[in-house]
Image 1: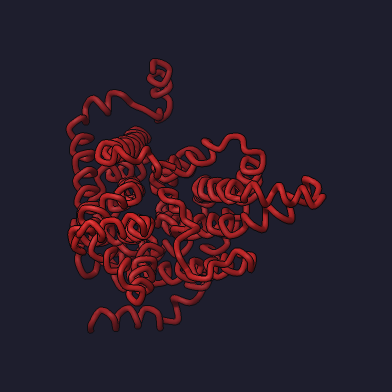
Image 2 (image 1 turned 90 degrees about the horizontal axis):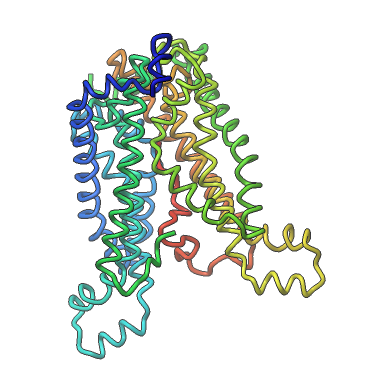
Length: 227
Length: 250
């Protein structure tokens, strides 16, 4: 730390601690915005993905189109999607969220379908034999058994979204990405390093948190889906 | 004049098809940069992943690599590479960003290929391996004629994931003063030229979809006849690995 401070007199060091201590409010605001953008995207993504996942699971005819459409959305590079939206929705949080939600759909829907498909037929038979009606079977049998797969999808979607949020810095949002972008524009390493480190840390914390939550709500499955 | 018409006019303008800043040259740059990074990354990642899978050591590394890769924003990777491999970042001198862009794209492309080739090799049924040995195959033949063909679809899935990711991130490379199709988008932002911005976005999207679909086709062709599922169910995607999932778009 001392060494970088001394070097800093000569050239831009990787970390300038004085900048960090002077910009705690900026860094905190970026982190909070990053979490907000991620949460909105993942929650909205889940709200859209669950019904679509159920439809794709039940209907062989609609499964193809649902996967193709969300697959195409997923393939389009983020910068292209965000910038294609800008002429219509401007430099707004709406533009950012349309893009971010789009990217969660394929991952979430695929894992919902995989999870529901993997519920053993015997279990379903037994539920029916015990007098479960279709809705009760879905809510009390199928969905709980699909939770490990769904959470696995949720983890990937969340980590992916946390990375993609940084790109929204280019359309005026960005969370921690705005620090990275700032570092790029001013050729100043400290905000770049801080933004990157916090983004990676946030991804790990979110991933571990979701893995832990899954273990708590599905005590019967010991981390089947953690690879 | 409505917006669609403006975009169309932009495409029809002959000046946009000529010279170093023209559509053909930018497309070529984009494809060449993506291809070169993919080649370098594959030469590193595939032998490593296949070896780890074959010998069964270091599996945790192979699996965690792609998780770590996913956690590092590709945007951050590019900007970090620009700092490390020294350009005057932020300058608009096109061409000077080639080295950082290449390094970042190679780093980005390696993890999915290592993880998928590892899993592909591990998923080869132990009985099949035994049977091959029982038939008198030597180790080399077991590897080349049994394990690799069976693992090939997953290896291809890894290549596809990486390739789509690389093409997407090469777009962002325009931010670190490199060319490619991302130039139209970044300059479109800079000049507030929305038709150009939109045209760039369309071209990037089309290129990505071409890469995705042609590699998906190649993956299907690479699947040995005996392994093709009679019904297209998602068997090849173990949960949580997003194996077959196309790339995380930049």
